[in-house]
Length: 65
Image (cartoon, rainbow, N blue to C red; front, top):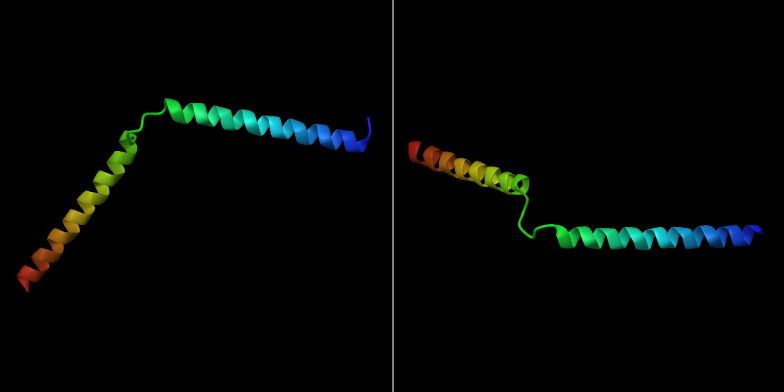
């Protein structure tokens, strides 16, 4: 087997692995629920709470002045 054949075989092997991984990722995305994960939802809630507190603080500062 020549060098050219070895490189072609390796390239084909890598292509096949990439196709398999792509298929696995597609299967995983189909299995995942479309709703956000609790952690993601919690982070958004924290950001919303922080924004609300900042707005209340600005309002209180404006009212005190």
